[in-house]
Length: 84
Image (cartoon, rainbow, N blue to C red; front, side, top):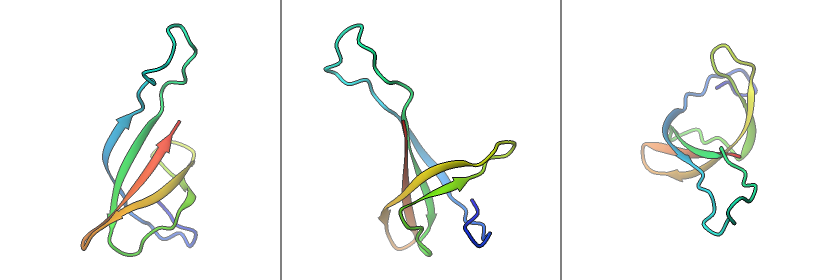
């Protein structure tokens, strides 16, 4: 990932969780599916603020994702991304 000043910031994908269909959804009801959340691991410092970032993947145009830091300890910061 590149920050505004073109600094590369490495994040490692550690977990992907698929969104579940709500238990109270009526049979035959139109339910949005395909959402998921991702947890990424980054360095302890610097910490990225809650912002929508253009994230690049090889061979693709940038995708804009809201990245939220949600946990930090002595050696890492964990970030959360939710895609609906």
